[in-house]
Image (cartoon, rainbow, N blue to C red; front, side, top):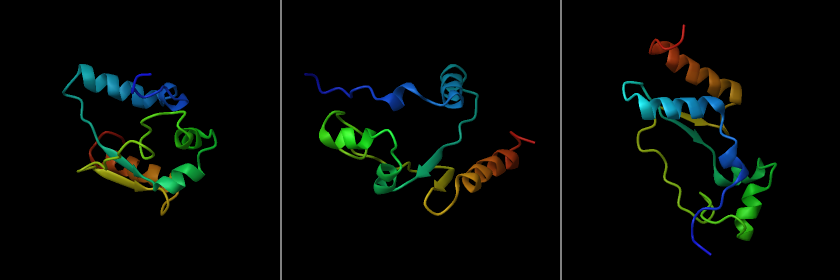
Length: 107
């Protein structure tokens, strides 16, 4: 058995916007990238995990799962940090939109 990361359902369900932005950045280096850090403690991630992916990782069914048996490194200089335990999803989304407006990407 190799030590590569096993595919997870999360890996196959990336939000469309993330995929588009990632592809655009790869092909056009002039595109601006804003790093957003979604700061959620591991225990909160596990409590919100309706698919049981963290439980599978804890049982060893998913290897090298970030935060469980693979190290997690916080971004060094994220431009936006969303604290999901202190702010609602709506408040965090508004913060992202505010930054995009401030920089002229959204009207």
